[in-house]
Amino acid sequence: MTAIDLGQVREIIQSSRHEYYEQEQCRVSCEGSLRMSIDDLFARVCGEGSRVLDIGCGNAHTLIRNASRFGEGVGLDNHPPHLRLAERNVAAAGVTNIRVVEGRGDSLPFETGSFDFVFSERGPVAGSDVNTFNAARVLREGGTMLIETPGAWNYFEPGYIFQPSKIPIHSVSATAKLEYLSAVMSRNGIDVQLAASHLQRWVFEDVYEWLKWHMSAWDYYESWRLTWPLSDEHVHGLGRLLAMCADESGRVRATSHRLWIAGVKRRGR
Image (spheres, rainbow, N blue to C red):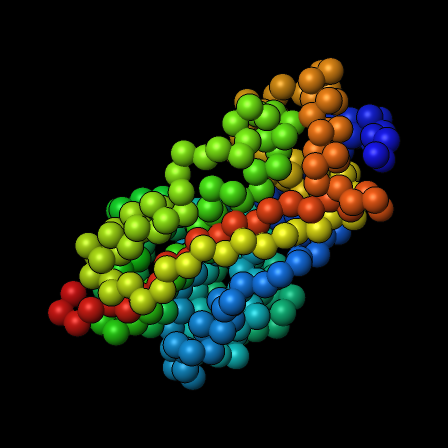
């Protein structure tokens, strides 16, 4: 098994900015692919004059990639660093049909029925019935809504370090969560046409790239992050991670789990 340089681990922990989009600086590739990408959905449901809303747009890369497929794209986020990042990315891409606005999913600042396609990738819609109601409100009749949210198996590998007794048992199955989201969307006037659970493998060059990736998200698990510096149990956990997830070259494979739920707004809603 590859030896762990604890000095390098400490440096990553101490220098990490704990910001989600720091992940873009990490060296990682993907094994396997979703049966359908969100770009495929854009191609199917959007046209030259379509208006698109991304709730929780983050870096706005999804809108930027698909800018040629719609008339106007709006990215909404309530996190100022994400808004600044999205604005920089839009300007750098030179696209003129995308704008970024500050706002919340529970009080969208748009008129009823003003968008043809509303989507939220790992954003606020899946976590709130109120947010789903508002997303459906601004969607026109016959328009399409997509919600993507992490599944129970998403990046569960940190548990090998912090919560080994709970791996691999999870309390919420993908089926149960998809059924719940389907019920919420249906209640808000969306006829569900797609409900899918996708597993992928993310491959990191070494355990340090894996650690950089997760330190950018561990701000959401504050109690975990604050348990460092390295205790004997954490060092043992890192070794356990390598034993279970690393190959002979030291590359670490982690699990990505995404749930997709999509549908069309019913007439008369």
